[in-house]
Length: 384
Image (cartoon, rainbow, N blue to C red; front, side):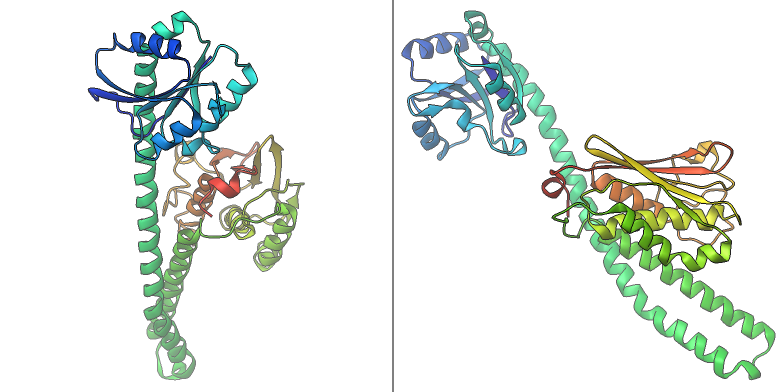
């Protein structure tokens, strides 16, 4: 049996390959040497006859590939595989004639790219197997590097947004305060035009303050502790509706709540998701007597939540863009808003391995969907 694991140091274009061979059989060492002798590139082969010797070798260098016998004098070759798949430090090929499928499956779960039955044909194909493993890992390495660069760019952007939003709030405080002071204490001395100007200053200052608060919330996403236990989504909906009760009453609207599954993400983030979606439904689709519908379901390790309104809806050509930062759309230009709320929802969904999308509600309106991965791995894999 042959089990191939990825190696961060392996590069397909390299001329020399460093292989660690962990094998206690002199016969198998000779066969592997013969198979690798036909390789077109220079190969440096380092030998170890046991797990202990292999670990000692690995303390001094990191190979591009390790070929490891499953049954060794001091243990099982699979013990060289990492506990966590993403931690694989180099490629491992496990060779055995007495292995079983369950061990192969366990190794695959640890990050194996492939496994093959050990045979003379397999040994003869080792050069091709090595080449294939290095090619695939080259692609994986490039993808991981790009993902890390993107994460770093996002961290820098979040820090910038947080700093700018925080610093810009300070000068807004006296603007709002002095405007209020002038309107309250000098109202009798100002004409209608001056009062209208002050009202506009106050309105625009509060709009800017709202935008900065939304940007701060967006920047904070991903910096919260993961909960030890699943969060009760139904309780979060009740809290959101209670906080929006004044707006709902003014609009003459109600919220119809269906059952939602619990899930393991920070409660504050789930609150932001539901608060933004329900708040958007009130803002853009509010019609007296027409309810907003909220519900969800579990599909394996994924949870899907929806918020459905019966307003004017979103043109089909704009639905893919409504989650973009600052995008308002043709139906939102006359409604007060910042264009940050749905972007925050999308960021939270992506943080938890999910996605967001919008569809037309049957009969008119919009239905917003949020899919979130919900598993025990959330605590380990997410940013929080």
